[in-house]
Length: 259
Image (cartoon, rainbow, N blue to C red; front, side, top):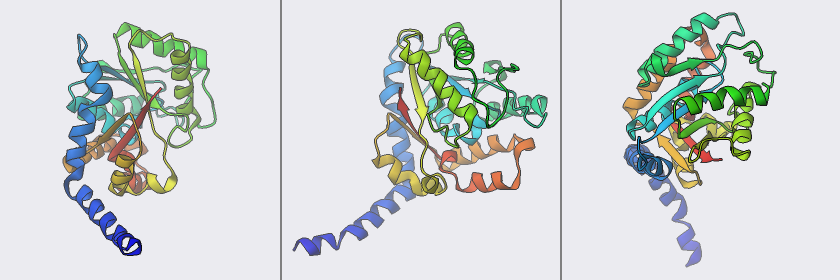
């Protein structure tokens, strides 16, 4: 009898996957974006004031679009602090403009987009930024704008980029040393395996079943919005980034954990 029951497992798994892919994303989106951290912060005076801390122009669209759109859907006011101008190929000024255009499409006005262009925070995949210097810039921005939710990369940096990981190190320092304002929460974007990273919406059931503190899943319309934002970064749209937009789960799904 037990063997017969186990024979149904593959069929049930396929059925669950189909349900999730054929409309589950919309239901999941409402459940996750409205609960947990967002619900807690919405109950406070002034609501959710979120700050997305990124390393380069295009991070906000390439990695965090589901979070930005999900927070907006939940009634949060989001801002972006980009910690370099992305000047690795001397395109910093162009990339700043592209960042503003992308953020506008994601619902963030230019007035809420700040770029730190400091010589000691260079755009370089092999350079680890100074934790104290970076933490000082980030904390000053948090305090000046009454931020109560910070979003950034986790220890893996999604792509392993040293600049991404430096952001996590700086926020972890501020959090562990209790330097953040009282009640300010920090969410870090989960780095996943290479396989999960490039299976797009097929990662929905996996992301839903695994534990996380926040999960944002975009609808088809919102996914197109995220792609339009990414296309604003014309200077970065090499052939492999077009493939990335088609297959990366980060264009559709963000799972995050609290520090």
